[in-house]
Image 1 (tube, rainbow, N blue to C red):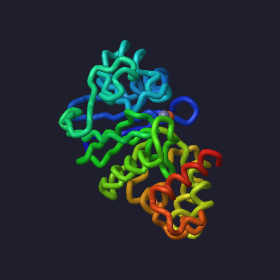
Image 2 (tube, rainbow, N blue to C red):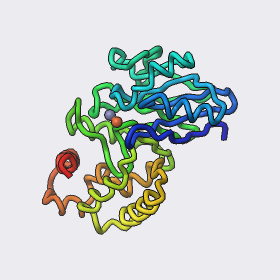
Image 3 (spheres, protein in one colour):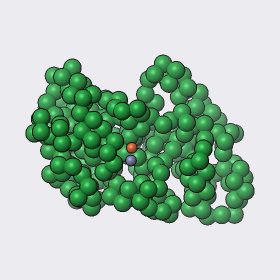
Length: 255
Ligand code: ZN
Ligand code: FE
C-alpha cells in the first residue's frame, strides 16, 4: 500500500505517528510532542516533512509544531474550532468539509470532551484513524473540557467506523487500561486474551497500538456500557448506557 504509518515514541508514553505516502512523497507527523525524535525518524528514512496534523491542542501533541514547521516549512493542520490554541496552524479542518492528503480523502470527525476542539483524522480507504486522546486501546481520554455525555457521543461516533479500521491513538496506556477493564469484566474472554497479548508486547517494549475498532468493541469497557457483566459489577443493571459510561470514567480517574 502507498500509505504507511510508523510510531515515533515521544516523551514518556506518547506516540507521534509518521505517515508516509510513497506515491506523492508526502510525509506527515501526527501529534508531535517534541521535535527531536521526529527529526531523527525523518532523517533515518530520508523523508522531508510536508505536514503536521494535530488532533487537539495539548502540549504533548503540539509541542513539536513550531520547531518542525520552521525547519521543514511543513503545513500545520488542526481543528478549526480550536485554531487559537494550535501553535502555527495553517489549515483549520471541520467535520463534513473535505480535506485530503496527497490523493487520500481524509474524513474529519469532531469528537469533543477530552478537549472542546478534539478531532479524529480518518483515512477511510487505507483504514487508518488517528483518534488522539479520545479513544485509546481499552480506554478513553479524561474529561478535561467536556461531560461524560459528550464523550459518550464522541465515542459513539467513532464506533460507526468499520470493524477493520485501524485505531492509532496518542498514548501507550494499554496495559493499565486493560488492568482496569479486567476489574469490570473478568469474564470477557476477548478481554482476557487481549490483556495477555498486551503483557507480552510490553515485556518486549513493543507498541500495543494500533488495534482495530473490532478489537476495541470487544474489549474496551468504555465502548461496552451495555455489557451485562460490567453493569452487574457496577450495580447498575437498569441504568442508561451514558450513566454506566460516566461511572466507569469516574472510577478510572482514581484507578
Ligand atoms: Zn490530551
Ligand atoms: Fe495526550
